[in-house]
Image 1 (cartoon, rainbow, N blue to C red):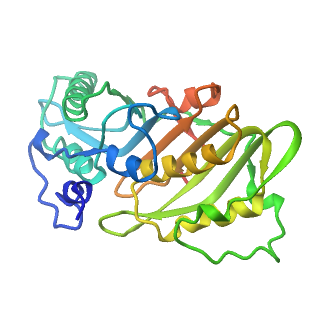
Image 2 (cartoon, rainbow, N blue to C red; image 1 turned 120 degrees about the vertical axis):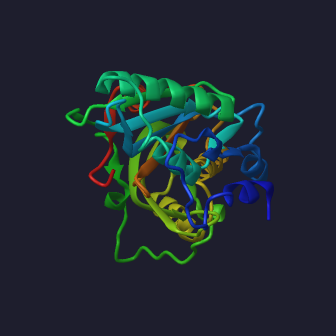
Length: 298
């Protein structure tokens, strides 16, 4: 068992003990470096920038008078962080707030909890954390409107998918006369938790600008090959980014965003893009004050 799997197994695949009182010690940090080394990603010279956004839909706590407070918690931290938080540990940690009392009013309760969560996660992950509670009445902001379903570019009757373990050799490109921009959405992304082997589903949004055109049928086959892979969400996003990064021209623009559906009341949305590209729409996703989604599944 790798060090990462050992750490992840602290809570995963086990009966949840949890805590009826606030408990910082439930948090588990997972080093990013192990999977990055396996995919030739230099942790000290990343080929991308980006962040991870988390939505915890079931956060709840109590005021000092025992009044229940429930909100959507949105978290964000940079992909340059050496660690990511293991999702079940985050769930158990946030659940430890459920019967804990903070503040005289709802707003005081939320502000105290926000400060505690940012402090605890910053200590555990050794990076800056942005957190915010979004009101239940908040507007849902639609993002990635111009991305087109990749299935629109292929003939479904002749498309044949046969490999379901990551297979970068499936990717094919064709040279074009000039740089062209492509905005694609793959709504059937599936990978699996590396410890429990439970399936994770999501929508993958891909933008690239290059003289090389990645043939859409080959891209569908490649993305489908993750269906039997066992990785964390962030790892899958970076693996896909790195394969395409190595495939395209050196000066190509590249952007990958995986909006996973929630599991256990939490979803994870990793985003990575090339340093020569500034994705304006992603700034909306990265704004912890805004509830931004890309499709009905999120």
